Image 1 (cartoon, rainbow, N blue to C red):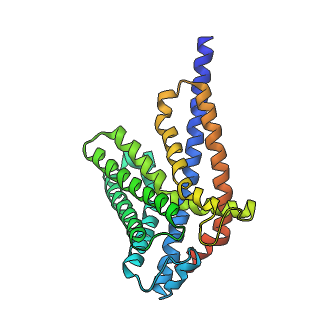
Image 2: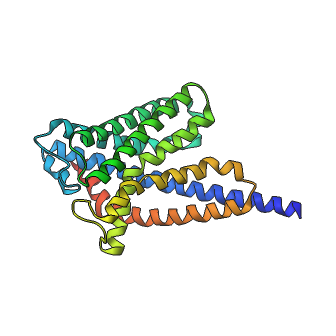
Length: 275
């Protein structure tokens, strides 16, 4: 009986491992594409001298009379695109083991870009405020502060060679970094499934207020599942439930990635390379 329980635990642990690997791969590809899209969309607008184009995605994002706020949000998006691309590379264990120097230098750039993304977004909020008002200001400010904390902790533990703590904080930082990607994904699905119930043009509806926090807090919960999983790997029930949870998320993300790449991200990236 005990031997059978051990075999079940080992099998369930493998299922959880592959479910986690599949989710990481999906996030890697999807967030990387979104990172390229962010760089393509905003860089193309800057290159073409058409900064008003920014406001087609989020109203009042670009304000000609507020150079500091525009610079802050520009820094936020540029650094955000970089961390979405680099963050996924840092998750690849083969790279960490075979090319430690490369991992460290990419990690430094990743952490620095995270700091710039956080500071850029906070600068915009403090100068201009978000389009959604007080609730959105609070939600997005908390997001920026958490990103700065996670970036600092990730770097601090890496320098001190506390590898387990470093990896845990790096995973939390990555969970926050993909928040901007999930923000668009969530809105896209919500509008598709509910015709935008609770969403207002100026982001003051009930759904908008929930989304001011929802685009990053659940990510941290998923990150904690990955961080804490080794402590409970002998519990088959935990492994199976966690695997099912991750597989459901993966299916959702695969569908969203296909839709957004086909209709939004892909065309913008191809246009960027054609410039």
